[in-house]
Amino acid sequence: MNPELPPAISLSDQPEKYRRLLLAWFDGNKRQLPWRGRRTLYGTWISEMMLQQTTVKVVIPYWEKFLTAFPDVKTLAAADLAEVLSLWSGLGFYRRARQLHEAARIVVDQMDGELPREVEGWSALPGIGPYASGAVASIGLGLRVPALDANARRVFSRWLIDDPNSLADLKPAHLDQVAAHLVDDERPGDWNEAVMELGALVCRAADPRCSTCPVRPLCRAHLAGVVDRVPPAKTVSSSIKVRLGLLVIQWRDQVFLLPPASGPVVIPPDSNPPVREDISGLHGGLWGLPSTSWLPPSGKSTSGWPGHIWRSWMTGHPDLEYSDVEEDPVLLGSFRHAITRYRLMVYVYRLRLAEARTHGCENAVDVSKPQFQSGEFAKSIPPVLNSMRAGFLSIPSPNHPISNLVAKSLRLAANSSV
Image 1 (cartoon, helix red, strand yellow):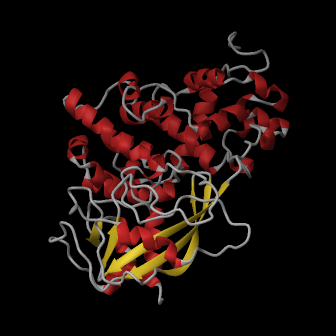
Image 2: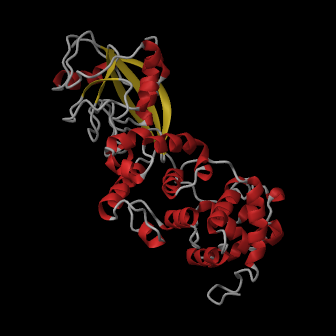
Image 3: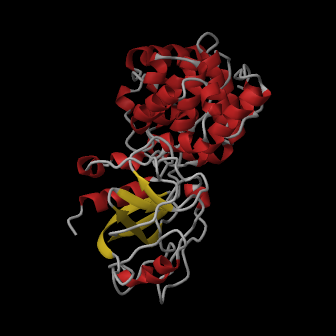
């Protein structure tokens, strides 16, 4: 027993038993993932950044496209942030992409383009916390260090605890100590992946599949019949309901987009105070549609606002000029969308213009209606507005990125018969 741990919580005297059982299971059951099949230090780093708060199924196509566009740290560092965000568009949590790009530039500018070869070097880069540094160092470099994500912490808790009343004695530092003790000497990366794989596929938070677990003879929670109580269920923070309007101004096969950090443009009359006024942390670096503020839901009606709420903004915008000033946008429909703890009801409006003035769009290429309706335009916006002014942009193109929220709105507009 390790004297630094409470008496009720001890480390295994025979860690090789855990290693033998779990690694044998991992060898026969691990998922075939592209970053495992084409293992590189750089590819491992990209996969770990993408996998934070995102499922493996969602990440796979993004990882493959990202590695095709940016095959190494130098190409990633040389890219514009807009290009990086474009390939990240739809993956969510865009701060990860910004930090990834910043870290790549640090590696190139300050480390001669050589990725770190030790845990401390990875920990010093933006966006790399204790888990990510341990994962990259063990999987990508073969260093004997632990990597504790939520899955691993749940697995270790169940291996150690046979009485839910003892959970208060199991501090994060204890789990760190256990994890470091159990890492396999010869296969540290495989061991860390195996623990996380077990947590993802078998030792799940809800409905754990103990009957298929290779380590159940050594799992104290299983032997005591308390797996469903270890660890205790997390208190789920209540969601925040939001009511939001977005405006699609369409001219030919182009849409009017606002540059990053433009913020909401309209506050409908008689609205309550906004739920959230600054969304730069959620959609930083992304181009967007004209929008209302994020508003609380209406107690009287679940419908959108009248189209005239956009009129004063449209007639006063310096980059928007058209002849149909008297025409109001039409409400096309609505959809639900989730961003972190926010639950949005989004109302989409459209205004078709007969004439429009463009800024710097000489190189824009019109697309066919099938392309417009296919949703291909939702992947990116072209790099024609060097002055970062709003304007009409043709679609698709490889650079300026939009959020999934905007992509959904454009798809609704493209498929609407109104």
